[in-house]
Structure formats: C-alpha cells, structure tokens
Amino acid sequence: MYIAITALKGGVGKTTTAIHLAAYFQSKAPTLLIDADRNRSAIIWSGQDKLSFFVASQAGATGLIKKYTHFILDTKARPEPDEVKDIAEGSDLLIIPTTPNHLDIDATLKAVELIKNFKTNFKILLTKVDSRTKNGREARNILNEHKLPLFQSEIPLLVAFERASQKGVVIKDYSDTRAQYGWLSYQSVGKEIFN
Ligand SMILES: Nc1ncnc2c1ncn2[C@@H]1O[C@H](COP(=O)(O)OP(=O)(O)OP(=O)(O)O)[C@@H](O)[C@H]1O
Ligand SMILES: [Mg+2]
Image (cartoon, rainbow, N blue to C red; front, top):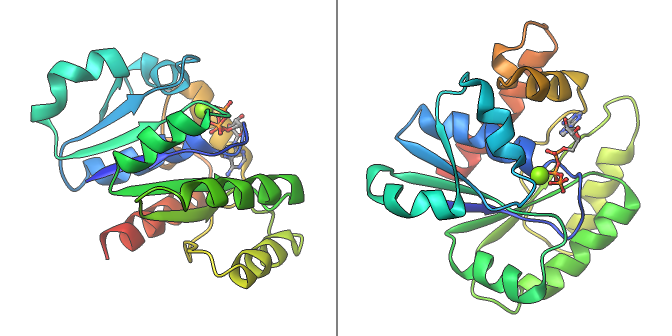
C-alpha cells in the first residue's frame, strides 16, 4: 500500500503521523518511509537508529522499492498544486492531517477542494486534539457538515510526541504513561486503514 501524507499547512503533524504509521505498518509487513521534505525531518528523526523501519530520501528510495510492501510518503509544508496532484495520484490513500484550529480547518477545506480534482482516495486526520476543550468536537462537526471523509480515531495533543522526536523514538518507546494513549491513537488509525 502506498500512503501519502500532505497538507497545505505546516506544523499539523505530517511527519509525526508518517513516523507513527510507518511503525504500525512495519509491524504488519516491510515498510519504507520516504521523506520528500527538503527539511529531512523524518530522516533526522530516524538518525539515532532507534526506529523499527527504514527512512529514505526520495532519491535514496529509488533502488529500494522492491524490498518493501508498504510505503509512507512524508511531504513538505505548502506544496504547489502540481506537486499535490503528483502526490495524490501516485498514492492509494492520501492522509490530510489537521489540527482543530480554525485556520488549519480552513486550509484543509481548501486542500480538499484542490484534491477533489484528482483521482484519489483521501481521508482527513484530526491531530493535536486537546481533550480539555471542545475544539476537536467542533472541528469534527464542521468536517462532517462538509461530508468529508474523516478518520474516526484522532490524535491527542501530548508533549510526549515532541519528546519522542527529540529522542529519535516513536511514542510507544517513550516512558510516560500518557504516551501510550498517543500510540493507541495511531494504532487505531492504522487499523482503520487496513479495514
Ligand atoms: N499530537 C501531537 N501532540 C503534541 N505535539 C505534536 C503532536 N503532533 C505533532 N506535534 C509537534 O508539533 C510540531 C509539528 O509536528 P510535525 O513536525 O509532525 O508537523 P509537520 O506537519 O510535519 O510540520 P512541517 O510542515 O514543518 O513539516 C512538532 O514539534 C511535533 O513534535
Ligand atoms: Mg514535516
């Protein structure tokens, strides 16, 4: 399966989602995370050799394709429409992460308008959801009103995600009891994809 992660906004959790979904997919079959962002965030995350899967740059992935069953593509912030077209049409599923923040939701609605022009299967993932506020519920209502495909699972706002990236691990390997909720949330997203 070829899964691409993109958004018109930066900082919405694309790389965090790519890393955690790659960890989930790797537990099923050999998975390659392709880092197509010039910032090389996923490559840097993997730099301490503590991840269960391999991360390659786009150029570096070319010779590796035959070895893997699943591919997760992490993309840069604010891609051009042409780039979104290539990303969308080359994947089995396009995941659009968004926080419940109204500016991010607005950018997501715009991304969907663009993506609807291409032949692709896409699904929105709510990230950084703060359980102490109603923002997640409100964002879900707006997306439902627009009849957009949305993952039932959502990713909680947890400092452990940031800490895990600093330590070069996935959140399940970060020693913090709340961190396990974060891992469970990405596992649920993975299960939704396979179902
Ligand atoms: N669920 C979460 N809870 C708390 N912090 C998070 C969560 N997801 C991501 N973050 C943090 O938010 C910041 C941005 O996340 P990330 O790098 O995954 O986003 P991005 O969309 O890939 O950003 P960019 O557009 O710069 O590539 C990082 O510091 C990350 O640790
Ligand atoms: Mg990123």
